[in-house]
Amino acid sequence: MMKKFYTILTILLVSISVFATPGKNVVQIKGSDTMVNVGQAWAEKYMEVNPQDFISVTGGGSGTGLSALISGTCDIAMSSRNIKAKEIELAGKKGIKPFEIKVALDGLAVVVNPKNPVSKLTTAQLAGIFTGKITNWKQVGGPDSKIVILSREVNSGTHVYFKEHILRRNDPNSTEEFAGSALMLSSSQAIADEVAGNSDAIGYYGMGYISNKQKAISIAKDPNSEFVSPTIENVISGKYPISRPLLLYTNGQPLGLVKKFVDFALSKEGQEIVKKTDFVPVVK
Image 1: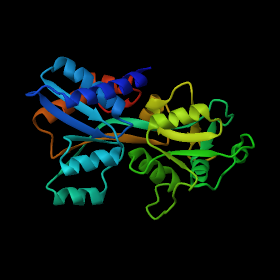
Image 2: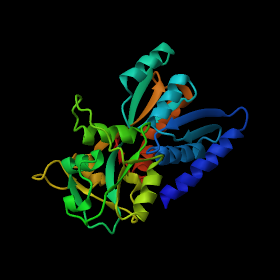
Image 3: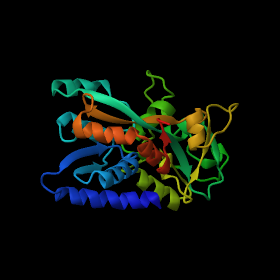
Image 4: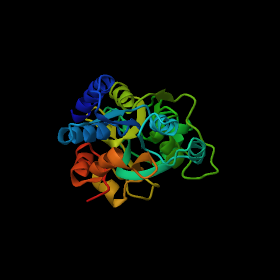
């Protein structure tokens, strides 16, 4: 319910931003779709206590946000992956100095339809499924039906993280890619909706998107390890094997209104919002 509320709020605030009152202090934030819900929640609460300021938050993917920061069309980029060396190089040519701020942690949930009897997989099995080496659910203990692979599109930090940590197993020399049959979807919500309506589908997204319309798979590093579900407790403890930092990038160390907003995100109140949107705080 909270997720739907913030999706509606995003549309509302984006519309309002076009007609923002002249003279108001405005911060433009863009990037990771994974972080849109928490970013919008921060913006709403921040503007309640700072009505003279206006915070506009839009998604589009981590790569889109970082491109906007580099081109000078946003003040803060939200990213669910670390900035790449080539992006830092391009930023330098444009006089931009990306400064990284860790604001939350996230567990990437792998999800199937609740009707699917498969409830646990190893990271090797996940790699096999998403690269197309495993094509039928019966190969991993499920029904005799073809696996439908769902992925985020390539400009998504979630896509990049999953490819590097699952498909390529953190091997910088690996060239593994998603299967050609994988359906590349534009948002985490699109994956959630497709999984909810397709009993053969498997996808992944930030655990804040899990609902009772999808079943989160328990993951193990290998067949001899414990199978662990994507929960806040398991991400905090380090037991869950697919977790990552959620980041904000600014041009140099944040100053002025940008610093004021970042400080709010890292405050006790801001970190409570992190928990309420099903992510993991980085500040107690």
